[in-house]
Amino acid sequence: MKLRNINFKPEASAEVIAKAKKWLVDKKPEFRSTANFCIFDAKGNDYPRIGGACHNQIMYCTLRDRAVVATEVGYNRWAQLGTSEVYKAYVKTKKLIEPYIRWLTTESYMAEFILNRDDLDFCCEYGLVVSADVMTPLMQNIMIASRNVHELSNKAFEIFNDLTQNRGVSGDLAYIAVFGSGISDAPETSAVRSVSGHRPTALLNLPALKNFVVGELGDGYGGPAFDFNNPKIFYRNTLSYTGGLRLFFPHGQGVQDGVSISGRTFEHMIYQLTKQDDFKEALSAHRKSLNDPNGIYRPPNPFTKKTIADAPQTHEISYKEFVEFALPWIQKEIVEPLVSGVEA
Image (cartoon, rainbow, N blue to C red; front, side, top):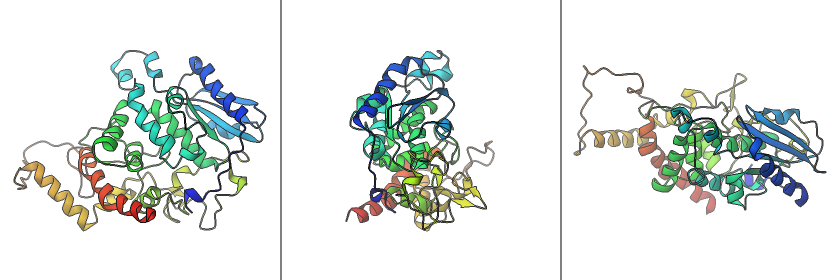
């Protein structure tokens, strides 16, 4: 099912949306830790949660007929915590995170469900007001996406901006690559790894990636007959939020033996691409061009001590290769043809 075919009809009143925005402004001085959010019902009653480790408290809300969730975008709170080098790596500027928030609120699969998406400045400075009239796992993904601004280091946003502004990579692909992998904390020589904890979408495998870039919800979440338009699964009516990682996986690929495989090293897109001849040939040419201006491959010195991080296996690439070669290649060879086909 296409995301655009979800019968999205937000029922939150203008008054409730305004109240949610006011809460974000008024409570900002009190925000702390990782997750700060507030749930509002159709009558404007609130269920605030400040200083949480994540958004899992949305499943314990005691309000009925939930209408919206206001969630913080806390890009500048690390500055309050100290001046150590660790903290400095997380102290962001509005300029740094703005391209990501712009993508999130205008281009991403989550954008339509963000009710204040037309006010970029407010979204960056305070946060998002998200409709409860959408399936709960998808709404929870938006909660996590808002929290990435605080949880991940500056490096993640620097790479996202570099990919989208300088390397011709779409926001969708950059999002999966940066926020679904360990790139924000790993050395550039480390092999690419998928990360699924506290991430809305892991580093997808190829079938799921293809679904993602064309906005196709897979049937790995609830099976081929699952109805994403059923109001019973909307957060307005149900508190169960798990399963967001599986939204784009084909049936049988999101879960294996009852366990999510979306975070497994040997299931993501890079492992699968290294089995394809066209990708292997292009990667080999890229590596040779770096070894010698004339494209002559020079094998590594066997007497040089190497670490595991400096020696990716045949099914792996480094994060440096991921950014400089693999993602532009995926954009050109996989994403652009798929998107062109959908637009046509």
